[in-house]
Amino acid sequence: MKYKILIADDNPNSIEGLRQLLTAHLDIEPTYVETSREAIEAVKADPYGFAAIVLDFNFENENKTGADAARDILKINGKIQIIICTGSQSMDTVIESLRARVTDFIPKSNIESVLFAVRKCFPHFDETLRCLSHEKQTLVSRYADNEAALREIKMIGRSDRMRAVCDVSKKSAKSKATVLIRGECGTGKELVAQSLHNLSERSAYNFVAINCSAIPEALLESELFGHEKGAFTGAMTRKVGKFELAHRGTIFLDEIGDMPALLQAKLLRVLQEETFYPVGSNQIKKVDVRVVAATNVDLEKAVADGRFREDLYYRLKVITIDLPALRERVEDIEPLVLHFKEKYDKNNEKRILYKTLDYLKAHHWPGNVRELENMIHGLITLGDGAEIGPDHLPSTFFQKRKDGMIQASFNFECDYPAFQKQTEEYLARAEHDFIVGKYRDKKSLREAAKALNMSKTTLHRRLLSWGYTCDGGGDNEATGN
Image 1 (spheres, rainbow, N blue to C red):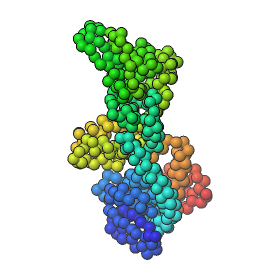
Image 2 (image 1 turned 60 degrees about the horizontal axis):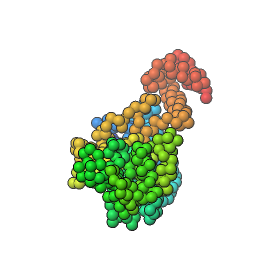
Image 3 (image 1 turned 45 degrees about the vertical axis):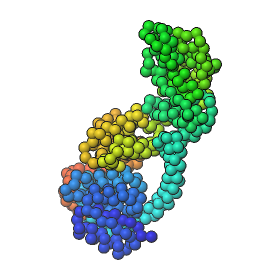
């Protein structure tokens, strides 16, 4: 097969030289671009198609260097092989390139080495492609199955965690047993409860939802069980409560952990006997209703602290569904973003850039899906232009961490000690080889120091620290390690 190679250089002569060199010795399909932006776009269009990328370091009239472009490309495909081939040989250029995690750094004065560097990329590409093909087929197939299953219950997602929620919901729908849904605020607990109702034999009857924490304690009993006319001051007419409205259907008790103790006892009676008394009435009412409750608090701890009845807790948790936080199912962010974009951008006037999606995936999302929906709604409404880029995101997406690093997606400034140590050793070796190579090339301490943009004393001290001996006056070749 022909290997696809991407060459990015703003110098036509350099491109022609690389073309002649590579096509004369390798069976390749080269693609040529003149800007770093075009290189990034080419990889976005075909993330896993290029066996190697040869990048210049300096691009005229561009803010990005080849190292910057390499970082962006590695965010798209972290396994791609990138070779920096440049006329700039300063120490800063070498170090910046290596910090960008490029595969190789080759001066244009030694352009023949590009041939060997590119050839070395082929086995790596073959192995990556083989693994990727299997992984991608498996992943794409699983994601497709998950999305289809979730769509059946009118939910959006593709993660295995949400597929598990879907499967439990389908099984639970066939039962009359009470269900306790646990999860942080904004994870979609009411949506799951609605799905349980829609999938059940009760779907022809009412689904009634009430937030137990949003209604004052004095009014909550009346909201749940209704009241008779004159039951209390201001009760001018009879009121039908939520339980009666939900007869033969489903009642969803959100934030059940905030229910007052007196009402916990009355709810327990409904669950045990399927009967209740409206406020101000001595006439018992029988009700056939399925109870689905939800909470964002630890009910076991609330039981231990005496804030929640233990018998009610066990009555509620016959079936438990745990909803994961959005940060624990990052795979779901992309389909959710697309869903909310379609919802709020009905004329399809906006385009959310991949890089923006990367930042959205890296965010902590304390408000979960609700926060994400509000974010997309705001970006669609207030964003200028046709594209929504990272610059449209609020400053909270770019907060500095305690160690001074920017908290952002795909942060390759890794804070893992083992990786840091490996990187430092790699850079130290690169610095050693570069400086010694320059000294041997110039055969003069004075000329080498000038080329390296450092003082002769500093260069002499560096060489001595590595075990090389040379004339401090400056024109003898170094000997040593």
